[in-house]
Amino acid sequence: SNLKIPKQKKMSKVNKALILVGGFGTRLRPLTLSCPKPLVDFANKPIVAHQIEALVKVGVTEIVLAISYKPDAMLEYIKKVEEQFKIKVTCSQEIEPMGTAGPLKLAEQHLTKDNDSGMFFVFNSDVICEFPLTKMIEFHKNHKKEGTILLTQVEDPSKYGVVVYEDDGKIKRFVEKPKEFISNKINAGLYLFNTDIIKRIEPRPTSIEREIFPKMAEDQNLYSMVMDGFWMDIGQPKDFLIGTRLYLESLKKANSNLLSTSENILGNVIIDPSAKVHKDAVIGPNVSIGPNCVIEEGVRLKNCCVMTGSTVKAHSWVSDTIIGWQSVVGKWVRIEGVTVLAEDVVIKDELYINGASILPHKAVSNSVPDKGTILM
Image (cartoon, rainbow, N blue to C red; front, side, top):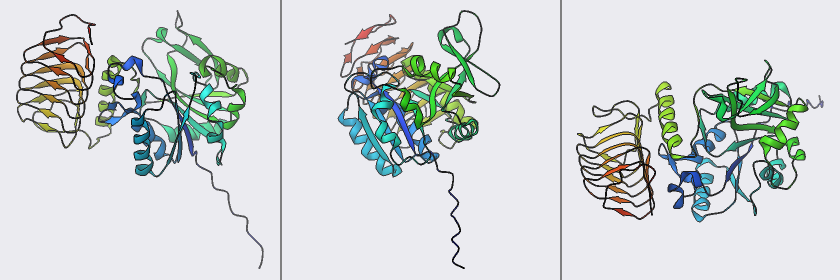
């Protein structure tokens, strides 16, 4: 028979995403003075790599990075990612800061062209979590409305804008920094939208949270899904360190083989295979050690991140600290109190550093006991 049987149209995958990379990463200085924020290593991978991997896993093939400046490092990294994941990564560069909604309008062509599903993800660039994107797609397809926001639960809602919603997830309203308890669920900065949302946005600086979401909620077009597991905005050093701890804990829960184990390791630790760690150094908990690092004998590291190519010399004690790339900590040094060493910093032997920010290419030869000191 010549009867043509119509092909079943298969559920098309969400194939587009936009990551709001934005500005100069001032909150993560001094690290961002030598590296664009999305490329700062978090648990031995650029922050943005965690997000890109999660998106690729659910079938995203084109990612737009909304940026306000285009450093060469970023362009080099994009090439690498495109090859590694066989996806397309485009930069959408704003001339003036466009807020959190403007960039969607600016990237309209990219987001709507060849978009069979009619949906796209939007991520804030500093968010780290377990990225429950498959669940999110299912939830979004079920309620059939314009947008889904992921929510996370916080202990102190008064510092945030909270979300009030009905049992089915439909958002009723947003309350900024509530004085009395209304809700302990906040916007986690991860969204799934239908492309229709772009019609709501004008090509000017616009806040998606303050200008677009309340209108969508009024139209009963915005839903929320509470996510399980940890969540952290790692845009500043203190939270970067907390985020590292939470991320490593979630690896532990998932029995990940990324975690290192040996007799001198306490708790959750991730060590790049190319790093050289002396067997008499005690590492952990909550430590990441990057490629080509050297950790000498008698060193004690806890709650800290040591980035590519850095050395911690014998018998130094480092806690609650981020050590930037290619830095050297001398012998018998003590560093604590959320200290951040930028790239290529040298700390001389036998010093005490407490809660300091040390700018790139600086040699430090005196102790810094007072928290909050910035060494230029």
